[in-house]
Image 1 (tube, rainbow, N blue to C red):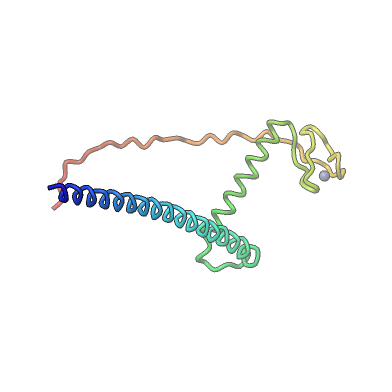
Image 2 (image 1 turned 30 degrees about the horizontal axis):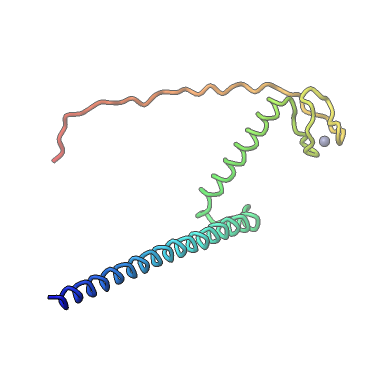
Length: 148
Ligand SMILES: [Zn+2]
C-alpha cells in the first residue's frame, strides 16, 4: 500500500509538472502569435503606404491622361480636394483672411491688394448658402404582395 501511495504521488507530481510545462508552452505560443500578428500588421501598413505612394505617383505621371478604369478614383480625389479648398476658405472667412491667389499669402479679407506680392485682391462676395432641398425618404409603405 505504501509503495502505491508513493507511486500515486509521484505520478501526480509528474502530471502537475507536465501541466505546468504545457501551460508555459501555451503562454509562449500565445505571445509568439501576438508578436507575429503585430509583425503582420506592420507589414500590412507598409503595403498600404506603398499603395498610397503608387497612387500619388500614378496621378502625377498620368493624372491628365489616365485609363478609364481610374475615372472614378480620380474624380473622388478631385472632389475631396475641392471640398478641402472650400473648407479652408470657410476657415479663412471665420478668421477674416483670404488667400492671395497669386502668392498664397494670408491677406485680411477687406484688403484691395495683397500685402505680400501687391496683387489686386478679388472683391469678396458672400457666397449664398446653398439651400439644399432635404426630402426625407420616409417611404414605409408595405405592399402586401407576395412573390411566387
Ligand atoms: Zn500675394
